[in-house]
Image (tube, rainbow, N blue to C red; front, side):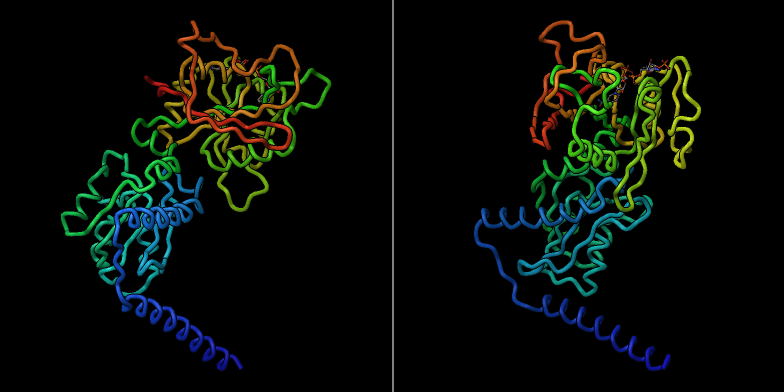
Length: 382
Ligand SMILES: NC(=O)c1ccc[n+]([C@@H]2O[C@H](COP(=O)([O-])OP(=O)(O)OC[C@H]3O[C@@H](n4cnc5c(N)ncnc54)[C@H](OP(=O)(O)O)[C@@H]3O)[C@@H](O)[C@H]2O)c1
């Protein structure tokens, strides 16, 4: 019986491999179609870079300190293989994609990749070598790698070897996917997202005695997804003392847990707080008496590429005063609470000209709350 099952498995495996290889070879052998106009070429490029972006998004938040990258191989306007980078030590997207194709790559195939292929040896060997070795003759790139070690070199290496490279297709979307990595790899400082739920009058808490949440459950669920995409969540000690938060990612399959970072001057922290006593306790870092900028610099050295500041007000105010914020994600609830805990107290701007102005603003209604995401008009260090 076991013998028959073994023979059956070998036959099925061989058939699947044969079917896959012959499909790849058929695709490789069919007629090349040229695209007549540059407009059609651009449209097609956008379509396939979008598909590569979808691939990249599969591992968003899981690849740090590496970027999220996706790739698709296209022959005769059809995607014949896909791949994405799954995290440090794993294959790069282009390599996974070419491996999934598992057949000689015909000269008319085009490899679409959201980020410029790497050209140097890191944890893996250079993707440019693998691309050339596979016989790929056309490559379309989303964004140029901002990493000074790679920037432009991968593209130049491919072009020098006679590969046709089109570059900058949906570059903004591709770069935005790795906004945290792009800042960290150049400055070694983490990308900082300031997030909180607040009342319409800019308060972080309801009057004592009432439930502590300001926003509704849908907004809190939405905010929770943000945690799954960052490397660390930072709060002030008062938030730990009052809220006893867990600062973990829950109800999601397989996400990494971010570091949990607490700032304190006094060192007065409840020993039994969840952050110090739950099963993730080793993922909690305490910084005592350090300016926020120093803490961020230190986190950057630990390969933390993104930090979510979840409050409270004092810490958010410091981040604003020191212009350390790269992005805001605020949830506004239809309630007026009054009271002392303001969302961004700090010193405040000296005058209207010095206020932090925002751009690329998006508004999204979530339940009864409104989520506003935006980016400072000038970089925090400018
Ligand atoms: N609605 C929301 O989204 C939200 C989010 C978070 C918190 N909250 C609420 O906000 C309230 C707490 O906010 P808060 O403004 O009063 O306090 P906070 O910002 O949570 O914490 C302030 C404390 O953090 C420490 N700290 C701040 N900056 C520091 C620095 N640079 N170096 C070292 N330590 C530093 C100090 O701790 P020590 O006193 O130990 O020296 C300070 O007293 C709570 O009621 C909480 O429920 C609301």
